[in-house]
View (cartoon, rainbow, N blue to C red):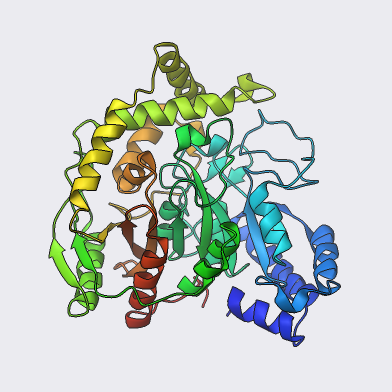
Length: 445
């Protein structure tokens, strides 16, 4: 089994392994999995090995938190010297001139960027496919690994790398993490630099980690946030936990296995925590009017920067067109967001953590969704992944952890949500869940 990021960094710092050896091992795994899973947009063999040699030569190697750890970067942020395609032929294929700030932080901490991972076009959808190819879920190749950080999730779940970078505008870390049996953390607003397009999807999108263990997620998060205290997971104390299987929108039934995941997780925590069954009061228009305004106008902002907007997929020309039409009419309005924030704040007045299913249904089929209509893609996405987006709209932290397997042997997951600033508490609770109900770290374990 692939070593954890914590184990790799420890061995490289101690000199019992090297960054080059770890990179070589990762690159071999990547090349074996790529024909089957297709997680990688770019495999940086020679450049990654040169980068690893640079880590081995650093005089401060013994102090690097991610010393020699091979890492995946989602192909929608700049990596110096590599194209940033963002899943679309409409993007500029020229190499990027500089690293995004989170890439700079990861490299400064000793991580080695071994490749860039596939995304759906403009990262709009919850399944990872585009004209560049279809990415498959290593747990079930006929299913999607989710999106839009599906390439990173598939790479980590395949055991190619122990940790990977993702970002999350309406669930794009948590959805693929749940599809692939991983830990995924969406930080709260402003904790990690975003810098995702002109507006970071109307300030909904955040960069964060995908990992196979809570400790690895915490370690990577500490580097992304430039705060080493986040790497130390503490006992969260006795928490007031609410559980709910109520979806935030009508017409999204929750599969029995995903309901049971919440119940099983809650049962692990009773005794140490005060656990009640209680649902937030989601506004009726939250996932239609409010979400649609923010989602489509955010994508339109991104499309404005494309080298060749006419090359967009047909479904995304529709999506961006809706966003542009709404922008001309002064949308998005703040009212829906503010109303939801007020209700969420009221709900969390006597609740520390909310636990929900991460998904409502198993991952949808792995197929060429980019060749289908906007309406067909929207319907498929909305029915299987409604739980994540509400927390992006108000910038609150949320994460997902595995909660067993369904009858088909596919992972299920639960979402943990907290108030702004609660990332350490969420990680502490996640670690308790991991200790009491350990999960299989990768699909091929």
